[in-house]
Image (cartoon, rainbow over all chains, first blue to last red; front, side, top):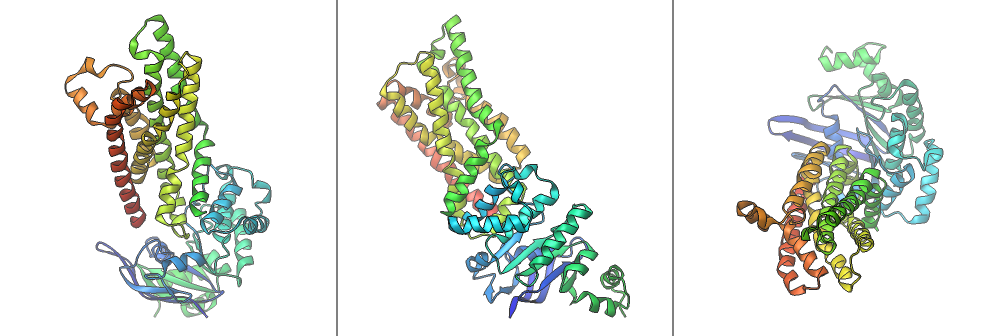
Length: 242
Length: 243
């Protein structure tokens, strides 16, 4: 079943076309990475798909629901971890998770179970009473992902989830993201080639708001005639194919 | 339930910040003690406890604007609001969630001020209870100003505009620190066109049991509260759409 389908999705800011007639299909359970240099349109695409921003033209369907007309339904089955950690830093980890449970109207018993389950999955159990602002960058990201997962979303958006993290924290987050694969459709944006290559079922490379290619990492390398994914990415973005 | 969840968070975040408690509670109480001490040494009718306390309680509420604006602008800058906009929370949940939890905090602040005033010699009368009740429209005015400034300013600007400018303006133009008639002229006219002096004069009249005199001031306060709340909601919704 198709989880996400965009149809000529376009976003313009005055004279700038941030996303240009994007046509993209993501299957249910797939982990897709949106890859591109700064200003490629990745975050704008996520903003439109998460109903934060309305497209200038075109539409997108999440599990068959339109981002133009079914925003309330879409908001009930998506989870979002924005580019910035987006946690209430003055509150404890537990209170942050409770806040999101409340925002989705999850009852008390279910909330408690979900909080324990996710805290265990993301290694946050011993930090539940700690202020979110006192956590390290890596653990704030974990909390951000836990907040995105607490409503049991069918589609999860992770906008640059490992940005600014050290190697160990990044590797630990990769393990967490890998453990989620197959259970939820994941759209991930990243600047890191190895992150996209290691985690994704498919990779969509964008430039200047346009989709250049969407395929598996192996196929992209084969098309670019190289064993190195970063070189393949550079060739594609620079238009050096053929 | 959604509003309650968001309101709980707003209340907790304000109460857990020691700076908020320091400014919101500590500062008005220190002023009350200090000005009462001055009054004992050099008797000034303006600083008599039944005259001073209403002014201090209204001045204390100006910090409510700072708390409210800070939390909203910080939520905007950290993308917490953007995250929450992707959840099923509706605009009304946000507006009530930012507004409702601050009302009991402001009332508690007022009660504590009056408790200190009682220690300092304020006579116990039922009018204290009415003065506390009628602080609610004043509170709504200050919360609305917080929602308004929090929707358009970043957290540094909020510190300057609400933390310095508004607290000073609401103090100077309120008839608390000095008699506006002594300054007179344009200054007094401007003060009378703004809500702060009316909030203080209303509270003073109520505390002294002169409810008839309080009424015209109440209309000023209510008018400004409704106007500020309307503009604040419009600005908040505008930034929500812009996001």
